[in-house]
Image (cartoon, rainbow, N blue to C red):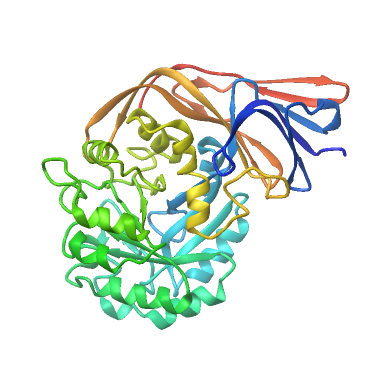
Amino acid sequence: MQFDLLIKGGRLIDPASGLDAQRDLAIVDGRIAAIDAEIPFERAARVIDATGSIVAPGLIDLHSHVYWGGTSLGVDADRLAAKSGTTTFIDAGSAGAGNFLGFRRHVIERSKVRILAYVNISFAGIFGFSQTVAVGECSDLRLCEPRETVAAAREHADVVVGVKVRSGRHAGGTSGIAPVDLALEAADKAGLPLMAHIDEPPPGRSEVLPRLRKGDILTHCFRPFPNAPVFASGAVRPDMRLARERGVIFDIGHGMGSFDFEVAKAMLSEGLAPDVISSDVHLYCVDGPAFDILVCMSKLLALGMPLVEVLRAATQRPAEAIARPDLGRLAIGVVGDVAVLRLRPGHFTFVDSVGASLVAEQRLVSAGIVVGGTWWPNEAVDDLGETERFEAHAHDTHVEVASRHFGHSHY
């Protein structure tokens, strides 16, 4: 068989299958066609030399905001994709039933990278979020109409993966727990999971958590005080353990104000690692402290989470959370979505949402991604130096090599 694309010589890590070994990977017609210890480069029209790199399933950012141009907080998914190793962005409720069609027609369908979405219980989605305007979309319960949410979820069933609710003083004003209950009714009727955001009380975490079902997602699971999942002593609160035992999915959802190093350390020390690592990237955290999913993954690595588990939390686990078994793994016949990553040594200072710092000796970077079988190199220029790309030809086969670049940076 002649292959369209061959990724050669990398360390292939596929948490879903347990494979961690040097393997070549070949793609035909947008799907993985072969995984083997040695595939001759002459058999492919194009070869990516992944020597020294990690070849992983394309990353899935379960919590992002990519309704670019249609909301004040949206960022351009295509601009972030190759730089962040992300082949699937899941928008976390930027659009509600009232504007979901616009999100679909003007962003989702025009994007090179895959975008799926949670539909917000608020009819208007997240409409009042900026540095100077903060109007919670759930502060007026007239907007939280479950019939409209269910109708939108059914109309756009091919791209909708769940229902989103933002509860708390900032997102819901004085609405209390009501938006969560309305969103749960909509999710139940639509047969979908709920992603529940919590910010500052009310409602408190203790009101939200008992309502969540197996397969529902608690995002901002390592958020700082107040509504933190740990006591001041560092002990994990009992309701968090009960939720984990019940099958509630814990998602980082880093964002602008929802990830605390001290909380993360306490949760990890108690054996409560996140199920999913996501960025909650939006216009007001894309330049820090979240940046993108790779920076968030690097922070968990620095906190002691093993590399394979960090990769699992950005591939296999989010794919399971959205019931998309064709994503988040590397296997014959599945969609050819691949991330080519490097562990870059250096001196990196990461910052969390409360301004605390953590120094690390390595971080994950992206050499590029394969989306549906098409190679998309990371051609970004960052403060670590320009990415160099070398090209050669051998036996009429195009071979591309992405070089390492090292340095010091502040994240």
